[in-house]
Image (cartoon, rainbow, N blue to C red; front, top):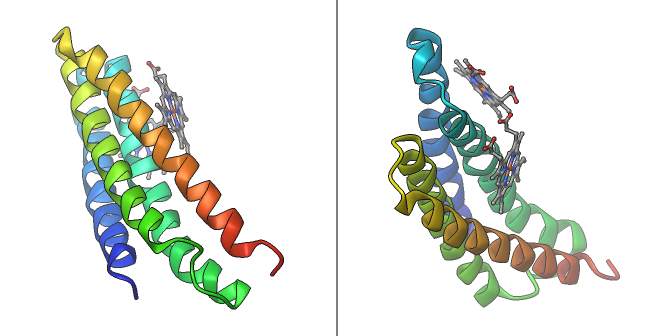
Length: 133
Ligand code: HEM
Ligand code: HEM
């Protein structure tokens, strides 16, 4: 397995633990479930856990389906770091916003944009990898 695949899988499992823990907190402390914290729970689970797992498994499986290596290994490395920074920053942004810290909004915009750039790199790399397979 490429090291980025392992890192994606490890990271994804950590977000699964954190994201579901936050859901559990909502059950025990219903007042904790503000709009920003629900958004944080949703994205820790749907980007942190589900999308990170799909990135990792996608990089491993799709080249094997198409019978050729991943189109750009360098792009895969860059995408890993952008997605990791993006999700960490989005987590910080939503958390800060949920405590009414003004910087939270700018952080969310900046790191949400990084996450989106990482998604476009994944999409391009995978489309080129499976092209003509
Ligand atoms: C132990 C596991 C989990 C617990 C205890 C939990 C708990 C909760 C709670 C209490 C809410 C509602 C918050 C509120 O409206 O007051 C919620 C919302 C939500 N959760 Fe979870 N959750 C868990 C795992 C997950 C996972 C694994 C995912 C996705 C893969 C997920 C996706 C969502 C989504 C999308 C919403 C928002 C639903 C809406 O739009 O109203 N949750 N969760
Ligand atoms: C660049 C990536 C993304 C950004 C910047 C982003 C941003 C947002 C924002 C700002 C909201 C509104 C939150 C609020 O209620 O205040 C939202 C809602 C939501 N997003 Fe995302 N999102 C991204 C990716 C995704 C992905 C990949 C999924 C699913 C796989 C997803 C699922 C959802 C869901 C289910 C809601 C509704 C949450 C709720 O019930 O409150 N998002 N997103």
